[in-house]
Image 1 (spheres, one colour):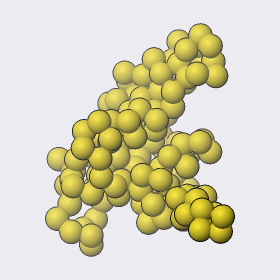
Image 2 (spheres, rainbow, N blue to C red):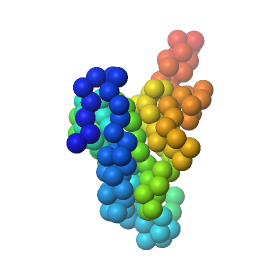
Image 3 (spheres, rainbow, N blue to C red):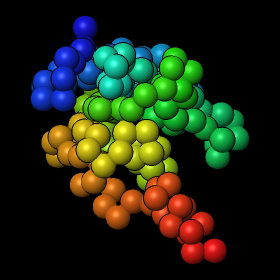
Image 4 (cartoon, helix red, strand yellow):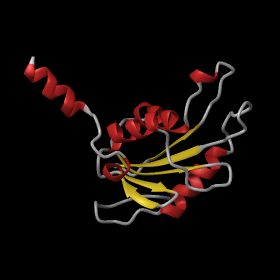
Length: 142
């Protein structure tokens, strides 16, 4: 089980990747054949999962990260601490731009992401991110 007792405990990336690989096998990708799975460690120790779900109307397909963020909120919310996203070979996969924004909003700048080039924080993956701080600043100015 992936769990943490405090902010300094190491992330069990091997287990997180294994969870992501297992859920990737449940992906529904009949059109592209590109299955994706994702697993996220939540600040309360839960692990939330997601897989991509395609649709004949290609533009309405759901990325794996969308499903994981939905599972995060459906199971009690919280903040993502670490996320592993894998392809059909179980190899680390960089989330698309939309999903990077979802991860930022649900994990913040310090959330760790396993990428093809190593573990990175969201601040490294999505520098100068737009978030609720920007919205609040704009609202104050009006």
